[in-house]
Image (cartoon, rainbow, N blue to C red):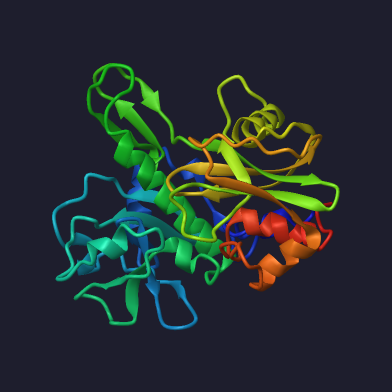
Length: 330
């Protein structure tokens, strides 16, 4: 798919304005320390996974100075700072300040399927606020979105891997935050990314959509599921579709991928050609599924369908569906 990398979180490409991850610097602690305290360095700041943004239109990433007092507000984080790389030579790190507690927290909003709340820090301008990434992702530049996705994913990994999987002892972050090493047994652990297939399943002029039981009313999406150990991407597509809907799939082709840091997935977008149409649902996996004609899918995108709401902006499901309707899967 020639436009695959235009998907949200697809990255800023190469060259000017792109994120140079600087992997060759990660094992040079003196250089990393020098960069961390450099005058041009900026810190991508996360609170409960929400990036600090310049929240007035247009949205943009708000990078803090390395010594900004907001970075040390509240108890010390259990998560390390991580070197993200450089953008046009400017170093960027990510830091978690989830130990800070705002004066008033709407916990119901934070736990909602779609978090529309924003949090302002007393040491920062009112225009800078912590915003849910899924709500802001399409408004950020490709490089800013890539940095936010990377920062959130790597800190998610640190939060669930503080102990050695080999012996159970505490592990330490090394390599500028890109490795955890156990001081007891010496085992090294690397950031985890879970591969998930998400599939545009078509049969002639129709496309298959489904919905999970906990989703808001009217929300449908392409089917998706985790790739199992020892399984190819193509086999995972066929297995997941059959398990959830009873539909048999023949030819499978890869289309595009999307990092999805909620918490640590890599979405592998595929096109599958259905061999059957009859639906037999697994109620433990899926609440409903339906076939939509191309014309009905266009109504969904336009917001005029009686049952199905438009897909979430920025997610690969909508990206694949819109490009199928526009005949741009090549």
